[in-house]
Amino acid sequence: MKIGILGGSFDPIHMGHLYMAIQAHEAAELDEVWLIPAGHSPNKEEAGMTDAVHRLRMCEITAKPYDWLLVNSLEIDSCERSYTYRTLEKLAQQFPEHQLYFIMGGDSLDYFEDWKKPERIAELCKILVIPRDAFTLSNLNKKVEQLKKLFPCEISLIPCSRYPLSSTEIRKSLFWNHPKADDFPPGVLEYIREYKLYQH
Image (cartoon, rainbow, N blue to C red; front, side, top):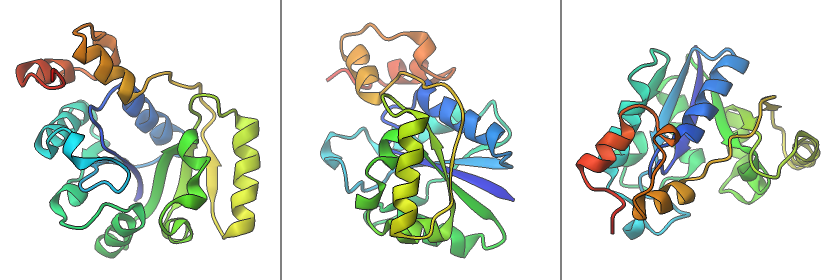
């Protein structure tokens, strides 16, 4: 099967994440997309992150209406720091019969060569890029060509419009108690309110 991997802190998961999953699923004709919430993130201050139990549950609520969208707790269950290459190595070992596709935003592609072992990531999977923010298809195509000169990689750009939403903006709207229901997958905002998340 063709499996898309969409990782992130999902703190909280929002419609921008779901949009990425849907666009990748349709454009690359993926059989499934797996949401993988970060466990011990190397890029974020862990103490400031919402408890993994809540982030995992919000992903499960998001995935429920879609038979092709699943949640994998591999990173949360691991004691190791959550590097993408490690996660992909584990998935490739567990599911050698699947072709893995790693889904990322255009903003992440812009500094992909600075990730931990990007060449290993490219070796383990095909990469699907969703345009984000100021990164146009022209800019992204130039970046892909630069990366191909550094190491072998198969990178496809998904031709879709940009979804102007970020987790930082979402958390601010929750903190000030004026979230927009349309910014969240069905059931997620209700869950956030039930457990009084992001109201520090």
